[in-house]
Amino acid sequence: MKRTFDYHPPTICYDKPAAAIVSQAEYDAKRLRALAGIKVLELIVPKKTARTWTMQAGDLCRVSLPEGSQVGDLNLWNLENPRQERFFSGKTRQIHSTHLKTYDRLWSCFPYLRPMATFVKDSLEDYGIDRDGGSLHDVAGTRCDDYIYKLITGKDRVGSCHSYLTEAVKEHGLGEQDVHDTWNIFMCTGFTRDTQQYFCKPSPARRGDHIEFLAEMNLLVALSACPQGDVSIQVGQQVPDEKCFPMQVEVFRAS
Image (cartoon, rainbow, N blue to C red; front, top):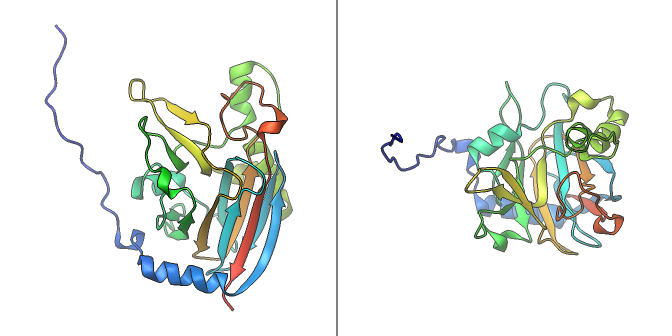
């Protein structure tokens, strides 16, 4: 006889700590002050590569799509202590959700567990949660990597967000062990209802779409322009080069 179980409604496991809740008016004002200041950095992340940059506490970073739909994998480190304090996607997921929304924060690892950045603007915020449970900007999946590619295909490859990020951080004295689970910006993902497997959909992001976040500490940031492009093709299959586009980074500082 098949076993039966009592029904219980879901309980949110973690109440948000006070530090996870920000004043929207305060952060809107911080954003506007930065935008009214000076642009201290502008760079392009070419398709299928990664680049790094630094930010001071209070800086605003805008990541935008200058040519076409493209997802990106983002890593954060404490600029003064990158080997010890870095972004913790799992705890960010527990405190906020699997997919970040504006005014959510990106949290650092143990023993620090403090905000590294605050998400303040999303041109795609109206997408919300679709009929399949898909949403944008997740902290649920990990970066794509060549190890799982070989497990899936049996082929060796060097050409993934993990390998791009690893190469990009070398100039800062960091290595593969310092690359960590990412914030997957512009990526549309969720979990299937029947098998609870991680799924992706073509990103709804288009040319001109952008996100913005404010640095809560001095940061080293790395961004990979994913070789999956808009992630409309399953990992392990060939992705045409024309599916991939560059990404633009701008950093603004209040004067």
